[in-house]
Length: 277
Image 1 (cartoon, rainbow, N blue to C red):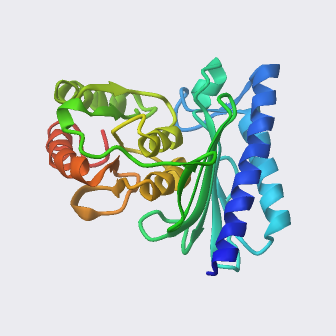
Image 2 (image 1 turned 180 degrees about the vertical axis):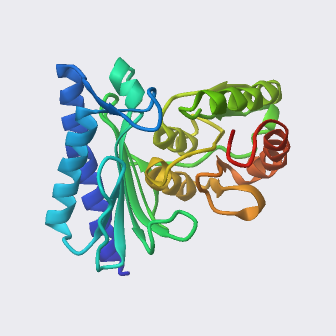
């Protein structure tokens, strides 16, 4: 793909994320209503999620009708171009519901099947409308917060690392994940649970977190954020050199990743079953 084509994809991702984010922010100011629950009563979707994704789908389809679409709140649609847009209209929906200003529109365009273990992410944008912060990245083009180029923190020992993580909606899984956190918290500077995987990954890119890990993520949760972290110099993956997936995502500078990986592998073996419970 030419650099011009890649730049056009990034521009479309950026502009669409900002437009959709402004709609989400407006709906937040008007009051939020839960439309439905999904995997658990705690796993909600709001009317704003649905409306925002519909807007994103319309804007992307109008601009690139041959591309596929893979969003959290609507049916996946294959395309004929070999490219697919992977979209989370509001990542951090519970934060959005409660008025906590840590939620984001996440939009990425990938080449290949919409599977994070095999796809190649070409461009991505993560926009937090509450903070008016736009994170962007393109393959081999670097990561940015607005116009500022991002670099992940390096040379941080695990004992001084600020870590981020998240929890699943299933209560039993959260209890197991809490056991991992309890065992890890004494080995790091501290742990944050922000509530948006996309923003956590961008925080690693921006040096606001030194590392982030989570199990049970969906592809739309991390498609754009993982590219932002990678292009800022972070290593993003799973155990044994694997690619990030629902099984696990780790993001950190390569040296810190190498220190963290065996510790997490041991803790997961102690406290979590193969299915994440």
